Length: 452
RNA sequence: GGCGACGUGGCCGAGUGGCUUAGGCAAGGGCCUGCAAAGCCCUGUACAUGGGUUCGAUUCCCAUCGUCGCCUCCA
Image (cartoon, rainbow, N blue to C red; front, side, top):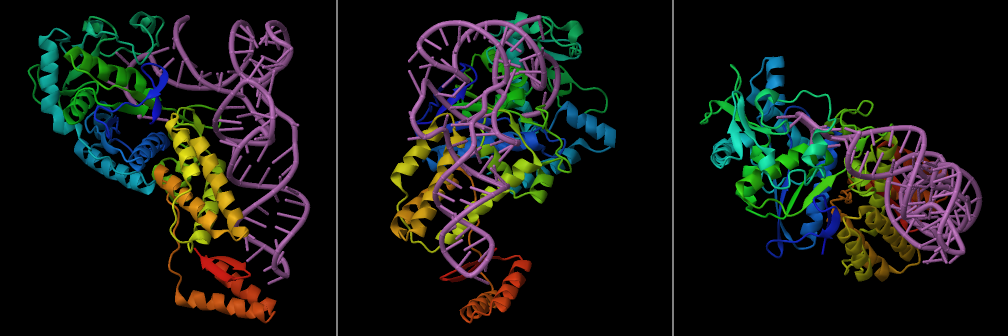
């Protein structure tokens, strides 16, 4: 069974399921105000790998991931560009899913939108106000963090420590708050801002109440796993938990956070990589699977550097996998080598040790190639099936042999004929032509194979 | 100031108190091939610095240096 590091307890522990065989996961999705950057890519890929592995393991996964389509950033951009805020959110959401498709991230099972859950949020905030956990001021409604048992669970800091020194940042709504750490649940609208009715006046949701009502609403109390990037740990996730706790409801039972994407200097990076500034650029320039491979070869909690060299190296390693697939295409179906699959499971179950799993994958490819070189097809077939299983389990799409046009096959035949006649100049010329047309040409003693 | 992470061979990136000291990419040598390609085999002896613990540390402890993250709206 899968064991995962839990941010709340700071331990790798079993990912328990409320209902055996079915897992409920909430992933904090994007605020749609711009194109998805490299950081978004890491987060979505990490959880896509998790999801695919769970499904591969036979578990029924319900993955809820929100679209936050109302937020200060969206309003800012709308104002700056003189556009309707909803124009920004619908376009950005489309771009988001196009990018996700590009990196082969499966669509979540549920994609709730914040704006569709405003009534539930208002209701929740009302409950919090009437219980005394929240209070209204002249600019909104705030949650009293002191009323929340264990505030700081995810930050791993007491309220006092968090306040000590602190940053020099401006504290939102500072004037009327009972405690500087109290945070907005509802923000009253200024003229011209998008607004929804509420008992406290027209306004919009504050600190990600949508995640609270949508996760509890769709997954129910005590859902299995809540995940997102390291930067959401505090205050975003802390504040979600605080709202749920203040409601007296049981929130996520396990918390998972992925590490950052960093640049060459080791600084948190989300925006740029030379001419690649977002995910859509990245899949234009590199093998769309390359980012996934880079991430698979590092651990999800470590910071990972994304560089042109790294993506290219990953692309070359994928090319090796592709040629393996081509080489083994003719092998019949076989039971995946049990020992290999067991070792793969053991690695993945240990806090998603994908680097170890990838080491195993490449070792298995090498063994299968050796078996093939030695003519032992039955061993090769079992190992090949294991390779396919492992790739499938982590969402690595291997390029299948595409149909080769008749004229290309004819050229390959001509190449072999020229070789048989020892007319190597002709043979080399044909090969050069095929390569120029973008074909991978492999001339073996059994004949020439051509693939993309 | 508080809390936390990290510093590994040409590059990326795992891991471990000693044993065959991951894996990928790149490099060199070899096998195969008419030549390539693909594949296979071999090679490189790395763990920031200074102490300490230990029979033995890259791995544990302490210190130092350096890098980075979070501390109110960034995955």
